[in-house]
Each structure stands twice: as C-alpha cells, then as structure tokens.
Image (cartoon, rainbow, N blue to C red; front, side):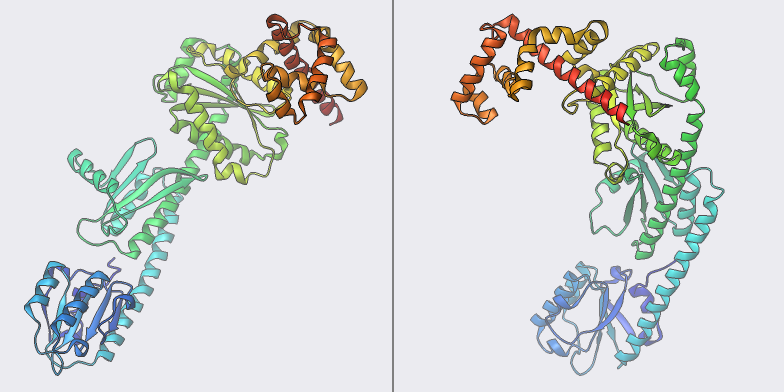
Length: 535
C-alpha cells in the first residue's frame, strides 16, 4: 500500500494543472507531510521537515541574495519542495537558484497562472488526513490478519513472507546466534551487500528500518526491512513494529513448547546425573538434540527456597531465560528439577579454557536482567561444580556442585564465588568435618580465646583474625579495628598468654588461621541447623 504522498502525487491534483517543474526533478519522490504558506525570509525554525511550501515571492522581491538564503534554509530544513506563483512579485527564477535546487534534488515548481493558496492547502490537507485514516485502517487490518495467521503458523518464515508480500520490501532477520534469513532469498554477493548496508545504517537512513525482537527482556533477534526503490514511511515502521511483536509471540510460544518437551526427558537426565548413562547412550541423546561437538561439561545448581513461591509457569519461563542466556555464551543446556533445585547440565561447545569466564558472564547478565530485578520472590542460590572433560563424568561435577551449595550455606559471610574451584580451603574444612570431630580439633587451639570472649564479652577472636590477615602489622590492625595502638598491644599480650607467645610462628600461625575458618564454618552450620529447626 502506498501510504505516503509525494511531490509527484500532488502535481497530479487539479490545482497544479498549470504548474511546471523547473528544478529538482530527481526530488519529486520526496514525501509531503504538510503544506505551508511562507512569505518571510527567516524560516529555518518554522519547519519540521517534509513541508511543501507555497509562496508568491514577496519576501525576497528583487533580492537574489535573500532568495538564495530562503532556498538554502528550505533544503537544510528537509522541506519537500517549493511552489512559487509567477506574477506581481516573481517574474523569473535566477539560474543560481536552479543550480542550487538541482544539486540538492530540491523541487521548484512554478504556477504559470494565478491560483488560490487556500484551496490548495484545503485540498492537500484533506488528502493527507484521509490517507492517515486509511493508513490506520490498513494497519489494523494487517494486525488482525497477522494475529489470525499466528494461530496456525508453524515457522517464523511464514511471517517474513507475509510482511514481504504486504510491503514489497527485502526482509532480513538476524538472530543472536549469527543465523540469518532473507526473504526473498538472495545470492551470496547480494546478501553480503545487504548486510553491509544494515551494519552501516545511519539514523537518517530512509531506505532501511530495523527493530530488535526481545524475549523475556533480552535481545533475541533483529528484524530488518530494506527498500531499494522508495523511501520507507511511517506506515512501514508501524508494520515492522507489529510484525516484530508477532514474531516475539511465536518465538516465545515455540520456546515454551520446547521447554515442556524437555521436562519429559527429566528422568533420563536424572540417571545421567547419577552416573548411570553410558557414553553410547549420552552420544545418542545429544545427537537427537542436534548438539554440536561437545568440549566438556559443568553442572550448575540453581537452588530456589522456598520453591513453592514459584508457579509451574514461573519456573518454565525462568528455565527458558537461563537457556537463552547460556546458549549465547556457547553452551547447550539440559535441565532437570530436584526438589527445590533446578539442575543445569551445561555442555560446552567452545574453547574449554574460557568456560568459566563465559559462565560468569551468563550469571552476570541474569543478575542484571529485568526479569531478575522485577522478581520479588526468593532469589536463587547458584553452585557450580568442577569442569569435566568426559560427559560420563557429569555426576562428578554434580556432586561438587552440591558440595558448593552446602559450603556456601555454612560460610559466615556471603559466598564470593559460585564455583567449586574457588572454595579452596573450605573444601578441605568440609571434608574434615564429615570424617572427624572438627569441633574438638578447633577447641584444642581456640578454646581459651572463645572462653575469654564469652566470659568478658571481649573481642579477642576478632582481633586475632584481623592481626593474622594483616600479617602481624600492628598499625594496619589498629586501623582496621578502629582502636588505639595501646589497646591493641594489650589484646595481643592477652592472646600470647592464652595461645602461647609463639602463636605467630609459621606452622602454628597456619594452623590457627585454618582453625578460625573452621570455627566460623561450624558456627554457621549450627546457626543454619537452628534456623531450620525453628522453621
């Protein structure tokens, strides 16, 4: 549908029967949005662009410099053209004016007979208003037809064909995974040329329009239309917007169906997590899901407590969102649910040396997403197991991911990392706690300090921990504790009395630092247990 009105269209109206185009013939395709009568010389701030100007020339009568200034202002203001009535005030157009107009493809039209400007403005404004009403009607008809098609469409290409047939433009969709689809199809050379045009698109480009398709608050693809024969109009942009919305609905529906189907595969995945699937079985399963050559795997636990705050729909959309984020980072996800935990088997498809950075990037994007910020429910905890090269060892990554969550829950401060690889000494503390009476060993070293603090409400444990972290620097320790040095000296003397004057010797110091971390681990475990008993 031709939704815009051009200078050429207006020349066909009855009031222009005695008109003549004397310059800017190549600009007759300019769009006209309004008609404006101008009889002043300073007009730069009076126009918004695409106005067709009517004038008798009285403002620049017998003054070529003023005439040139007016034409240059009109060109700078993106006016559609100027119509001048020959007669009392203007008898001819200087050659300099014609040259300027031709270079800028700016139409200059002469009325060879006297005309009524009021009749011209009424006629064209009526035409513009009727065309605007028709545009709204056509837009609504397009939207209704598109919505009906959505009920039966199975592939997004059908929607691309629909907008292509309606606007008669080149349609391109660019997905975030670098997949592209051209409608109609184009040869490789033309595809490259079109993609270069899209990448180089400037803000004032009139032949290209593009819009981002968002799913769950994240960019999923970009829809582009290109016309090599005409300027794109406001109507084209509106059609593009409605089409992008329809595509987003279709993609979301397809993702939701795929997620539901994946839920049915949970039992098989659970066996995989328990180490009960053979290499042959795993390879067959990956082949059915079109996964590219795997390069190792990691298990990530997403613990939601209490999970009852999330509906089935909430969880489905949350898993879809996780999948969309991690797939952009070069991973394929397999998802299972275990009680209050979403288990993600993350199959790596890129360089194994960068897996950790890419997982961190994915979690950071999740944390910064609108979906995460808008969520008023309990925020998930994440635990990421160790990287395994063999897919038959996924159960090992799963066990270390479970251990990561257990350690995080027992640490006295919030976890600084989601990764099992970053827990270091806490992995050793947790291992010892499961096999020996760790509390007895801790008390062997720290009981005098613990008892002193409890009896006198002292701060020896805090002082000891800070003093060790400052490598025995008294000035830095005093500054961190916000105490005077005399107070610190008194506390250190008390520590030497309780722990022995050699407590800063290398071996003993290492043991004490280890025991302080173990003590905090045990205290957090006790508090966690008491909290669970209360609930």
